[in-house]
Length: 129
Image (cartoon, rainbow, N blue to C red; front, side, top):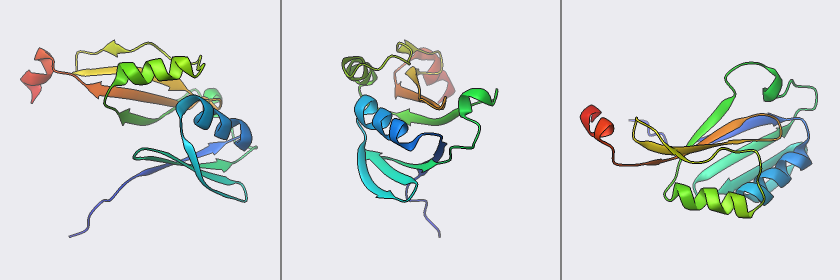
C-alpha cells in the first residue's frame, strides 16, 4: 500500500529576497537550497518551496481564503514569544479555541496566512473524540 511521507508547501511570492528574509529572520527557517527563481526552506519538520512569481496577484489581493498552512506545534506560547523577540509585527496573540486548540496567526509579506496551533485539553474536545 502507498504511504504518504511528508508535505511541502509551494508558494508563489512576488519578491523572493523579501520573502526569504521574512521566513528566515522572523520565523526561524533556514535555507536548504537555492535555484534560479526558487528557494527551499525548512524549520524542524516544515518545508517550504518559495517560487519567484513577480507577475502573480499576491494573496493579500485575491479576496479569498489565503491560509496556506496550519502548523501544529508544541509550545505555542513560547513560539509566539520567540516571534515577538524576533521583531515580527504582523501576527495575532495566542487564543484558546473551543475546538481544543490554542492558536495564533502570522501574515507573510505576500498576504499568505499561517496558523500555528497546539492541542490543549478541553471539555469540548473530549466530547468530540
